[in-house]
Length: 96
Ligand code: SF4
Ligand code: SF4
Image (cartoon, rainbow, N blue to C red; front, top):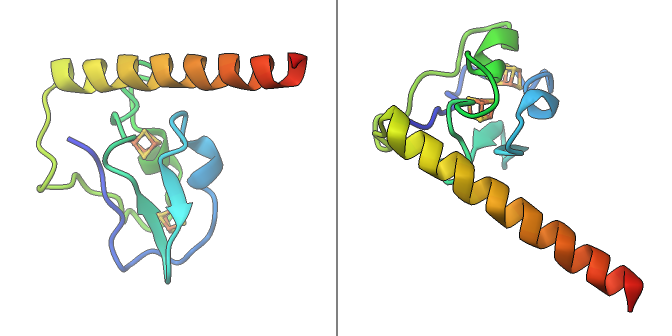
């Protein structure tokens, strides 16, 4: 499952830089997790890094985005492939 941030978030900013998938961003009022990018840290770490650092424990699983480990791994691989394509595109632009 992807994770989500509840309205108990105190906007302390510590989770955003810890996310290996850049899935966390500041929303209109509190931080948010993009479920399309959250792999529960599968592929990167053994534990969700945002949960490890959150001082108020406001990052539960998102019941709307139920995914097993295989699906999370597949998402991780898609994100890695996309990141590679983006990097290649940037390099090609720089070389032009
Ligand atoms: Fe990012 Fe991992 Fe938290 Fe998901 S669980 S938002 S991938 S740090
Ligand atoms: Fe909010 Fe927790 Fe992230 Fe801090 S670590 S910004 S309290 S979700």
